[in-house]
Length: 495
Image (cartoon, rainbow, N blue to C red):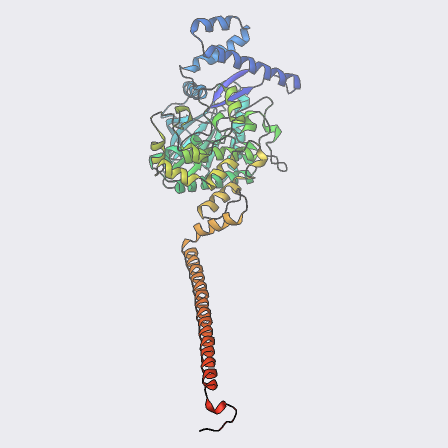
């Protein structure tokens, strides 16, 4: 068994046949390599030599091949990625100025999922164009790498979307090394683009909506990316975000929506731990829900500047346990507290809560208030450990984000009348203010009428009482005069 570093992802290539026994052997062997490597990484050279000498020769050779990639840093995947890039650069037969068909190589751009990527230009005089040439890595399991490379070419050939880097051409060199000619995206990684321009929450959500559109398009064409991360998303001023590097993407089964078995080698696990879903970390079935989880991680980082889980410096096994088992804190709570460097996307300990909020055009308290509610709910739903509890698709995630931006109720929230009323007030503030004003005027008018009626009734009662008193006095006076009237004495003579 050999362990190869590829673009921040770990790949385990089995050398045995596809049997249950060989699969178990691979798992046990990897566990032994990992355990010995972790033990050697944390001790001084003398103790390391003692540990290595006590291991069997083959195990010792495998661990010794990994130890140089430590480079004195605890961030294992990053150091392996850098070491892999340097190794691939040294092994490539190409140099700046080399010609490949109509193209002239200019400089290496970096390492893709399967090999080196070069910046090249059209040199046949027909027209000017810069492209990205991607070569399959040389050495090692050449057949397996080329198979993956051809799979990537097949995948890209069926994807035509404004936010997916286009496949322009492809072929093989004179030595049989396959290559792809890709659209060159002159842009920055997703997080760098947003932070350098201090984009607010709305602008960041708009970018993610475009990314969701590209991912959903790939899913509808039966492709799952499996390695969505900021480095694979470049953003330019003119074209917006572009999704790159389908080097470990896989075709989906047409009916089940799961990664086709014939395209995934037994015992193999390729991923970037910080962005991998729990089912990827645990080696379980990968579906479109795995890409939805990665989109949730990107959304969390765009909103907070922090990772959902602080996993830098952990061993790979510890990363698996932490990401798969640890609860995810709400973004609105996360942005108000100070964090360690491991939690930050940039890893810069100088970036405190104030600086991270400022990069989003806000302050910590205001940013927390902006994230509280719908965005908290959307993020946590996308990051559910159980794939069945996440959004069913990237389109559903995008739909809820769009609803939030438009002030409409989101599907992730419980359907309650007071929530819908609050969203209606946010969405139509002028109309709702007018309605509220009309209701207040109506209430005031009704109360005024009631008070007026009460006052009239009171005055009527007083008038009736006064009238009764007047009648009583009048009757008394009439009776008094009648008693004293001499004509009312029974008809006696007047003298």
